[in-house]
Amino acid sequence: MEDWEIDFEWLKVRHQVKDAMGKSDLPDLRSILFLIGIQELGQIHREFTKEEKQDLMHIAVCTLLEEDDYYEFIGRDEDGWPHWRSLGKAPEKGIDVQEKLLKSKIINYFSSAKLN
Image (cartoon, rainbow, N blue to C red):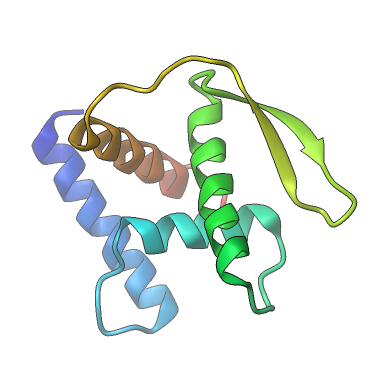
């Protein structure tokens, strides 16, 4: 996808999430990663600690980058939290490049009907 296409599709995802959540502001990247983490964990109706919120964003990143062999899913622990093993493949360098990659993966995630 070209940059303008990613920007356009990213804005559509942000509006979709804003509308679904009944919010007035568009969510940022971190907020959407958090929501994907909750979706993947499957424990939607509960409060999370600050550390768990960070873990949820990690779940989202691992989920999104798993198909490109950055991570390999190894299973769930006794509390139902998913875990991955890093496959040692380093993501592209630079925050802008990494953010673009994540946005592209989020766009694919939302268009793939993975959501319940």
